[in-house]
Image 1: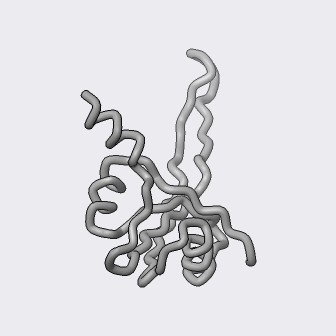
Image 2: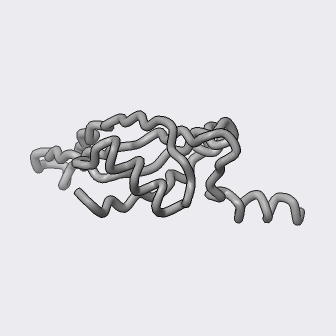
Length: 105
């Protein structure tokens, strides 16, 4: 797989980890650690030290279509996250817009 599009997760936990040099990305399910490392290095011009991945199983969802009808179930799609550790001195400007807004206030 040559081109893997990774995009950062914008959550509070991801922001806290980015302060320590670990960045969290959403990645395709079939992406390997080597593919993820190459993509991050190309997209952000940084040196990747380590990559950890986690597959989050899709959650079962129940729904009801009226009082007398049988409630149905469906499942959300599975998702894969990558925790990318960068070399010392490298950083990715993911949360700069939020930080700039806080400094202005």
